[in-house]
Length: 144
Image (cartoon, rainbow, N blue to C red):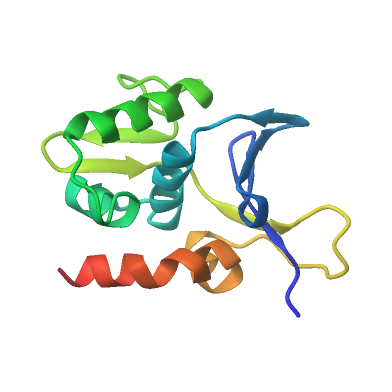
């Protein structure tokens, strides 16, 4: 059985199994929709994610305005102390969408039985339950 993995970027850690974000020992509180937007961004780190892709992944059966996504992006930027004009984590790609800029690595959750080495983003989908839980939906989105 694989060990539980954390996703790490900058000073932040995401524990996908528990849908928690940490900065050191302090939990970063996010609304469920902002956390869902973060999932999409992290799983597609380095790639532009369009508004349509966000809407299909985060609000699949609901019609929402662009303001819903904008509010989630603003919440994430505030939580990560990020600036739109000089982003470290979330870049606005004008008229296209958003891109997660930070390198994302994995590491075992503290106290885990197995030793797993950090790996760059391309291995995340196979290495994390988050990727398995949400990867199918994201693969379907990319085909459109």
